[in-house]
Image (cartoon, rainbow, N blue to C red; front, side):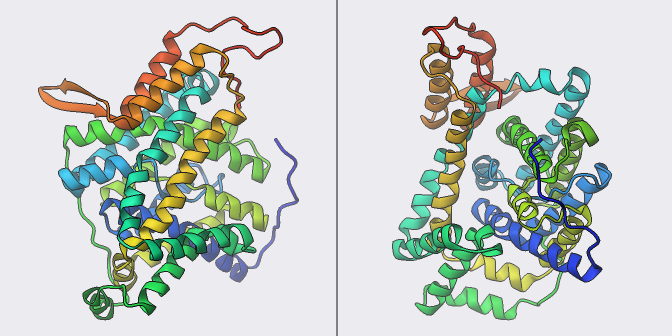
Length: 420
């Protein structure tokens, strides 16, 4: 564990409320962007994120100060299912992904943390994360093409906030970019008049537009495999959160418990019609900034997220965002996802002098980005494994089957992966 600054304790209730609101603002921008991109309700996403966070804290006995919000890893498969099969089928697929978390939790409990993590080394997870980001790049460019100047204004505002911002503004560059782009669109008449009328007519308070799930094995086959990647994301977020707080959450409450809680929380969001919920690094950054590690502050932030979800007027504002604004923030977000994959390979010191590592990474990148697909049949239902899911599966199998290599250069690292 890294040495951390002394935590701030004994806060008055009013201060906890303000800090809780800050956490809800930190997760707001990314959490509402995901449902807008995939065609789901932002209000349901906010409401579901709040409920998911509260459930996570309940199941982990309030020991881990983590906030759960919309997952970017599920954007591509969820958007595809919503478009071709409907939101209910997407909800069913996301519930299946949550069940995979529960399965991983049982495997961790059975085999131990270290043994299971060997199946997902950085040489596999790094390029898979790259595939997730670059696979979405065409979506960002197509949105930006609808209005390039608006996309550039949004993108520049987010970059300036991220680099030159201070305090909380540096933690929410996406929200700053969206607000700046939207104001620019309003001033130049780029927001649809009908959308503005809907904002004026929408009530300030009201329940979100919930909808139930439906079981479609095609949706399950497309969405559920993403849990293989988000499993690694979960482990990384829990480790980093523990380093900030100064505790080892992989031991107490334990990885199996946090995985189980994340799976149940994900299903709670999906069953209401929201996107997948996942542990948020944005809020871990807020913890590091404020040095307030009290889980009760996160729980207050979750209550604020639920309240935000109960505002139809806010939902109407989010639905009126021009495509150019969405394209501007998406360029930054999707590129950052790919950059995280590159950083994963760099920090793990993967030795590309060994052909084994080159082969694994090459297979994942080409199959994940080249449009490869593999047809299969489950219980008489024709399915298709493609994109990130196919790339991740091939990478895992290749890593398990390809033999470890001897040192090719004296004094060089071994061909096997170096643990982070």
